[in-house]
Structure formats: structure tokens, C-alpha cells
Image (cartoon, rainbow, N blue to C red; front, side, top):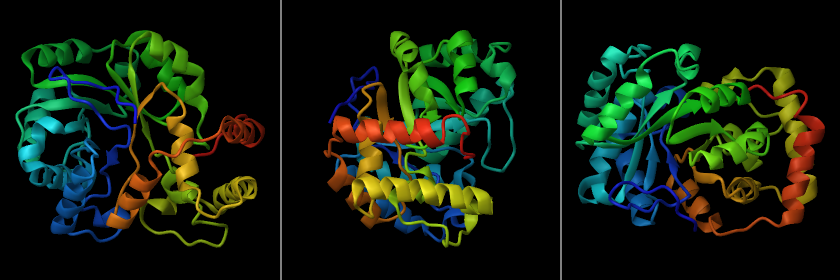
Length: 310
């Protein structure tokens, strides 16, 4: 598999990353004990997954703590990207004056003395527009070695345009999947700027596994969808299944993202050993050019002019 991001220690990164919002996150994703989370992360590391995306706000800091307990003697082999702006106690704080304090809190939970990457977690527009001195401070922290890279996590093409126009970054984390293809229009410019892209929400919160339809009932974070959105997503999933003639869409959805060389890492949310095993089994599957174009055509026909809500 292609490995693009490298730290100063020349650390190679597997393109199959690990999204960690669900680690210990009973509120949104169902029960997972601390021990179960640690076991899952250790298994992922043993199987060669070494990019972990987390945040202080995930399970009130538990996600970071689980990763910290799991990495043990593997720290120099592991790339940890955590976030800033939403704290473990549920506060939103993008003040540049609390930047260092928030980093130290994450370092304590992660049991490390540096971050491979610090990601501004859906920051307000004044930051995206370059009206603050966050970037200058982040560059200082980078020079100190407290962080190795920095970037932003955003959701829309409009935000991406602002970032590319105003900010000097190493990384952009963006929603990108078959249903959210808006970032493609910016790939050329991102590549020219030598920015690495982390693809988040690659399976559209489960829809692109193929396991949901219009009759599915949702709990936790997935309760955000109204009936119209559920019906529309169900229709789109049925279109994909009719083309693929398979009920499990996971490997096709993941391969679609990785078929774009501009994508450095894909971070599916992995909750179980079974899900991890599936991703590992699918990671070398390569989507045909014909099927890739079909997925693009479905987006162009049904979504581009009327984007889905996240």
C-alpha cells in the first residue's frame, strides 16, 4: 500500500488508518469498555495499522487514553493525530492562549511527549480566513518539536477554498466518500501545495457498508437523519448495489477513496475486531476504472447539485 506521510523520523504510514471517535464512546456508538478499546487498538497495530486519528472530545478524553495505553513500546512506529478546540470536559475553546495547555492535556492522556499532528477541530471561520495568529503559534510549536505537523479538520468545499487561500498547512482532514465528492475539485491545488489529505467519514457513518435501508432504525449519533434523508440515502445505496450486484459495499467504498492518489490516509471508524479484519482483508482491493466512473456518475447525477447533509 502507498505510504505518503512521513515524520521527521521518516515514519511510514499505512493508508488504512484508524478513526477513533468510537473508542470508549458509549454515548454515541454503543458500549465499549476501556479494556476492549485497548485490545482493539493493539490488534490494529499488530496488523500494521499505524495511523490513529483521535481528539480530546471523543468520549471525554477516553479515546486518547485508550490509544495511550495501547501503544506501549510502539510509539516511534505510530502516527498520532489528535485535535484542538473541543476539550475533554465538553468545552469549545479555540483561544490561541490555551493552545499549549490543550496540547499538554492530550500528551498526558496519550502518554507521549510529542504529537505527530495537531488538527484544528472544525475551527471557526476567522481562523480559516487567516485572521488570527494560530498558524504562527503552531509553527513555533512545530519548531520546538512538540508537534510534527499541523492542519485542520473541515467538512465542506467552501471551507476548503478558504483554507487553501489563507492558511499554510501540512494536513487537511475532510469528509470524502462516494456520496461526498466535492473535494475532488480541489485535489490539484492541494497536491501543488504538498498538503496531505486525511479522508474522514469514508463509509458515510455506515451507509456505504450497505447494511442500512429505508426501514433501518438508528440510535446515537445516527439519529441526526430525518426521514427524507434516510429515504434518499437508501435510494442511493440501492443504486450502488444494483451496479455492484453485492450487498456489502465496504471494500468498494474504501477502494474508491484510495483510488485517488491525493488521499494520504483513510480513517474508518473501527468498533470491533470483525470490522478491523474486514478492512484488513479489503485493503489491497483495487477498484476498476469503469466502476470508479460509475460512482462518480452517480454522484454527478443525484448528489452534486443537491448535496446530502452529513
